[in-house]
Image (cartoon, rainbow, N blue to C red; front, side, top):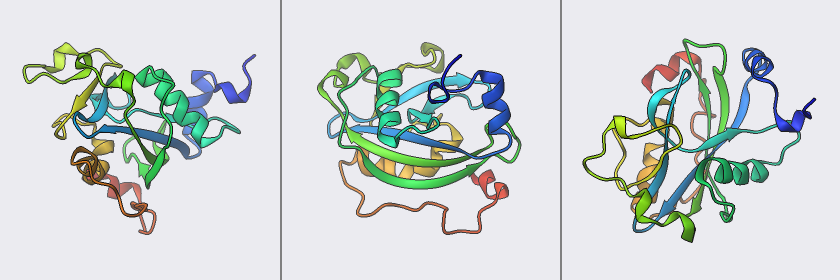
Length: 186
């Protein structure tokens, strides 16, 4: 049997995620020349689109440990460090109970050598059909097909594309009387 730190079997995870918020981290990797690195996903929860790589924090797992695992699992690098907290948001999907409520921490990190490769440069003639889940590419602009849940991060993404820093941590919608109905804007 797996330890709780390894994660739950899918059916238990889906049940737990339907009765309590999940805590996740998203990792926005940036480079002054290439822009931001996004990953393609196509699943039953978010559909096809670009997203910021991320993961759900496991029981008794350190946030930085999860960020490192996201870098390994989604970006194939174990060299990222100096993570910078950028933003905290609550995300509530108005039409879904399973995986329908998250407390989300957006971190950024500067790209490392193995991620700076022409292999990951987005070509102008790339189409949606060119990608399989997990494909990663550099973006110098915000893609139209960014998953809607990550549209809340567009201003921070633009700062990173322009090689500018965030002056302070953005508390997103934590200071608002936020409900799942507010999520419809994304």
